[in-house]
Image (tube, rainbow, N blue to C red; front, side):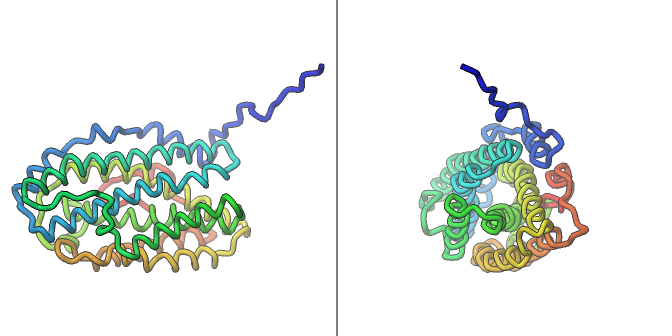
Length: 310
C-alpha cells in the first residue's frame, strides 16, 4: 500500500503576517489578572470617600456593564474562530478569546474584592454583577445584535457578513464602547483624561485603573485586527463601504444609549461625544485608500493618552 504524505499540516506560519505580528505581541505582553495591584487601596479609598448610594450604584453599573461585556464577547467570538481558515488568523483569535476570558476574570475579582465589601460596610445592598438592573435597553440590544451577527457566520459565511461581524465586535463593542469606558474610568479615577467626566473629585483608584490599563493594552490588538480585516475587505472591493457605514450607524445609537443614562456621578455628554469621534476616526481609516492601520506597538502604546492610539 502506497502511503500518501499529507502536507496540509506542514509548518505554514507566516511570521510576517499581520495576525502573527499581533499574536507575537500578545505573548510578549501577557499579564495575570490576579497580580493586578491596588484593589485593597481602592476599597479603603471608597470607604473614606463614603459615596452616596446613587453615586456608588452608578459606579457599580459602569463596572457591571464592562464586566458583562467582556463575558459576552468571550462567548460570542467562537463562531469567528470556527470559520477563519488561515492558521495565523486562528492563532490570533485564540489569543483574543483567552484575553477576553482574562478580562472577565479581572472584573469578577474586582467585584468580589472591592465592590461587595464596600457595599456591605456602607450599608448598601450587595448585588450580582450580572443583575438585569444594570443593563438598559440599548446595552441589551447592542450585545444581542452582536451575538446574532457572529452566529450568522455559521450559516452564511460571506464577505459581507464577516465585515458586519467585525463591525459589531471589533469596531463597535471593542473600539468604540470599550475605549469610551477606558476614557471614563481613567478620567474619573486618575490624573489622565478629562475633568468634565466625573461630577465630583475622586482620589486615584489604582486598582481599577491598573486593570483597565492592562485590558486596554490587549484591546489595542483586537481593534487593530478587526480594522485590518474590514479595511482589506473594503479596499479589495469584496465589500462595499456602505455595508460598513450602515452597520456602524445602526449600532452607534446603542453605544450612545449605553453610556448616556448616567448622571449622578458621571457626566455622560463627554462620553457620548468621545464615542462619536472614535467611530468617525475608525471609519476614516477603513474607507480612505491612502490610510493604514497603525502598527501594533502604536495601538497598544498607552503613553500619555487615555486610549489606545490611532
